Amino acid sequence: MRTVLSALIGLAVVFSVGSTAAQDIHFSQYRQAPLLSNAANTGNFVGDYRAGIIYRNQWSSFIKPFATTSGFFDKYFKKGFLENDSWGAGIAVFSDKAGTAEFSTQGVYGSLAYHYNIGSDGKQRLSIGAQGGVMQKGISNDELKFGSQYTSVFFNDELSSNETFAEPSISYPVIHAGVNYQMNYSERLDFDAGFSMSNLNKPGESFFGADDNSLNTRMSLVLNADYIYSDLISIHPGLIFTGQTKAFEYIIGSDVGYVVKDVPLMKVVAFFGLWYRSTDAIILVPGLAYNNYRAAISYDINVSSLSNASGGRGAIELSLVYIFNTNPKLGIKRSVPCKRL
Image 1 (cartoon, rainbow, N blue to C red):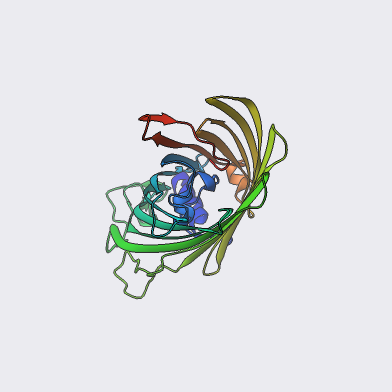
Image 2: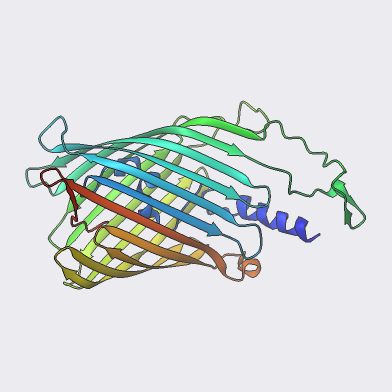
């Protein structure tokens, strides 16, 4: 009966947490997955190219873990229609497997964004982005055990589960869009605010062929800031709020960076973040930035009602982002400064 109990707990994790964004994938290190949080982030960085990967493993302490992997690549195009504008193009992919039933979600998105610098000083920027892609979801009942397959307390896999799944796999197109505003308030302070909408086309989603089951639109609001406190210390607070129908989730907190070394062609910054996900987890994020590399590892300490089963062990995430710039005159890669690497 232990397998049945694990399956029930897994279903509770997926479906019963009312304050989270249902089954949508999410990352504690949302800044390390910029194209998933807002299409307007595409090409919105200092450099020519950017690439990143992030991996999340959750609930491994008491059920078959939920594992999510995502990667992205985007490019900045300096030349636009006007003097103060630019473009960005990119691609983002992800794969997620959840629980004993191996409920899988895969997606691939193509992104385009337009950036316009407001004013002659270039201290304000407005960005508009759009994404289009394909989502695929599937489920496997090979590892599931149902009541009809038990004789007394003994499991017999030759007995029928009496369950019928119309489609083990489904796929559908998705459309997302977003806007973002950035302001360089002073030499020491800049901030940005972004708003995005996912599933704008409200695609149909059903394993039983139902035509009236549509995926609801999900909205996200992101607020970030960077404050240079001194030559050695910087503070990076942030907030992301997501909502879909009556479900919602937010993450709030801050990273604090300390400059370990800053000499020509070498800048090393160690940072530590403390974040909180609504009614779910306290998130610890140590990391290191070396020139244009930024690597981090985060750990979610579960504080929800599931903590009795999880023992407080939530999720671990690993991430790496790299920005590079090619100097066309020298033909070499060189480091470029970027506060929000």
